[in-house]
Image 1 (cartoon, one colour):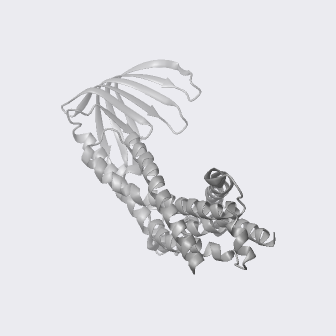
Image 2 (cartoon, rainbow, N blue to C red):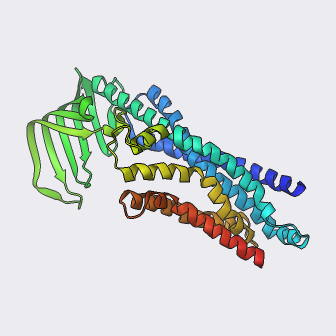
Length: 359
C-alpha cells in the first residue's frame, strides 16, 4: 500500500500539472481558431461562445495529460533502477500500473459524459449562437465593424449605410478551391434561414475568377449591374441536428428506426461505437504507455516523450480517424473501425508488458 500510494501521488501531481498546461494551450488555440472563423461578431457573443469550447478541450487534454503523467512517473522509476529493486524484492510490476489504471477508470467515466452529452450540447449551442450572429450581421453592422469572415469567405467594406455595405470587397472560395473576388459599390446581406444560406445582393460589381491552380479564367474581369451570390451557412444553424450534435437517445432512436434520419445506418452505428471508444481513451493510453515507460533507462522526460507519448499518439489518432472513415464507407464494420485504435493500443501494451516481465 505504501508503494501504491507513492506512485499514485506522483502520478496525480504530474497529471494536474500536465492538465493545466495542456488545457491552457489548447483552449487558446481553439479560441484563436474561433476568432479567425467568426470575425465581425460582437464581443458579447464571443464571450458566450467560449464556454462551449471547454468540453472539446477536456476530451483532448484528459487522456493526453494522464499519458504524460504515467510516462514521467514510471519512466523515472525505471531510469533510477527502482523497478529492478522492486522485482528483486518480489514485487510484481503490475502493481505499478494500478494507480494509473485507477485514475484512467475515473477519467473514462468523465469522458463518457463529455463525449455523450458535453460535446454534443456544446456543438449544438455554438451553432445556435453563430446563427444568431449571422442574423445580427444582416440587420446592422454597427459603426466600428468593417469586416466579416464566414469560414473561407471574407467580406470587408468602407461604410455601412441604410442596411447596405458600401464599397465592399468580397472574397469567396468554393469547395474545389476556386476563388472569386468581387468589388461592389453596394452589398446587402439577406439571410434565407429556411434554406440555411446567406444571399449577397450586389450592385455595380466587378468580378474576378481565379482557378485553384492559381491562373485566372479566360473571361477575366467581368462587370455586373446587379449580381447575387449564395453562401452556405447550414453549419451555423441548429434547425436540423448534425450527427456530432445528437445525444445518445437520439442516435439510438435513429438506429432503431423510431425516427427518420438523414444519415445512413453505417454512419450512425459508427458514431455510436466511436463515442464509446473515445470515452475509454484514458484507459487505453495507460495500458499502452505504462509498459513502454518501464523500458526507459535514461533520457528523462525528453526520452519519455519520444519513446512513449509520440508513438501512442501516432498509433491511436490515425487509426481512430481512419477506422471511422472506413466504417462510414462500409469498407469495414462500424464496431471494427471505431475500436481498431483501442484494440491496437491494448494489444501492444499487453505484449510489451509480457516481454518486459520475462526479461
